[in-house]
Image 1 (cartoon, rainbow, N blue to C red):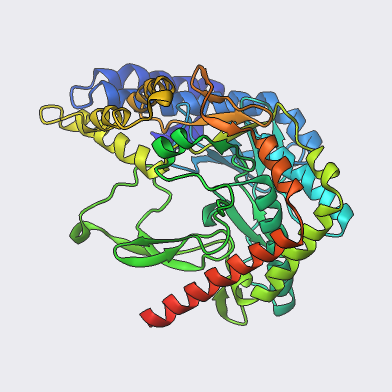
Image 2 (image 1 turned 135 degrees about the vertical axis):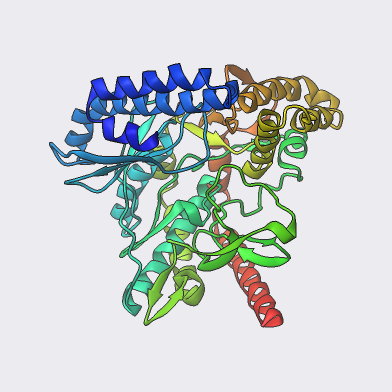
Amino acid sequence: MMEAIQQAQGDPDKRECVTSWMQRSLGKCAVLDATLSQLVQQVADEYALAWTRFCSDRIALEASGVIEAGAKVSEVRIASADKHHGQHVLKLSMQESPALFYKPRPGSGAILLQSLSLLLEQWGFMLGAAPAVDFGSHHWMAEVPYSSTLNRSQALQYAYNGGVLYGLATLLNASDLHFENIIASSSGPVVVDCETLCQPKFSEPAAAHLLKRPHDEHADGTSLFLNLDTYCNQPIDYGGLSCVDMWFRKDPYAGLQVQLAKDTRKLAKHSSRSAVEVDGIRQAPAVVHFDRFVEGFVAFCETAAAHKNELFGLIDQAALFRIPLRATRVYAEMISERLSEVYFSSYANQAWGRYLSSEIEKVDEAFKLTALAILEVEREEIESLDIPVAYVRAGSRDLQFGHAVLAGVFDQSPLEMIQRRLDGLNQNFIRDRVTMLRTRLAEYDAQKIALA
């Protein structure tokens, strides 16, 4: 069915025919229930919507240089299994241009990173940014070619530019920049998912309910360097600048990240595209050339301290950024439970719904009304088999979630957090952050020796 849609994507009549057949026939199939039919219809609808938007946006994409004039689409496929608003990220392979990614969410972060890249170039730094065009409801991003092999000189530059990226991400209070969202280029790391580039400060009740941990504004939430965790009783690192290879779920990109029983799990070796090969050895340059990484971080921070207003002035108050409310795996497991109702309806116990409801009982009374409003949106999204997604505007303390605008979730807006970070950017801050990085690296090295 997916191939039929892809083959029909260049022919409106064929595409309409395929879509109509899926919507008409599958809903009547006795083997398939309403929810499975709904999923198929969603896929057909989102392909049709993406193609309509591509045709409408094409002139702007060509004018910006994101695609070549007259370039033809050769294939369309789903690029990420995580679905928000009933839509996936799609990859459009082009015959005369690099591939193009359709992202059905606002692209404020991608546009901001482009502007910051130009500003940093004026300061003497090189920080790559993926070409992108934002249309508000969605944005398009050109594929960043993966440079899998570097020479030593390039690796040293990569480590230095990684330090620059880490410094910028720290000042912006960025999050979620793990290994899936960074691509290695010949000149350095490039962020390819910028939706969480600027984050607010959660209120304590909101952090306790949604993040499941106290909020520490000095914590490193970037996920860039040695972001350590465990899986199947083994340590793993999914840091955007430090992950190389790891044994993990067979498909770490799958939307349904179900925690299977240990004896039924299938692990596979995954290689990060933020890591590179140097002299025949796979490595993360920021780790191997840590001192060079620190040099880039320190140089950027010292320069930014002298140009605070220039950096701050690039951030539009109306810019929209995605907020990771709960861990994606939490929502994914709820969706898994929701699917169990589809396939095993006689035995379904609605565990996902009870889990959400039981969480409300633990909420601080002052936050309970907001938590109930969040719960309502979460239920609607999971019923539609979507991973709930929330947003915040750079100049606002309000959470935008579904059709609701909720106060009381954040103590500080993204801009307020950035201003505080900039105001506190001095030699003490730089020294403390470098000490933290060195301590983390030493602990990581000690852990590797203990496991060897």
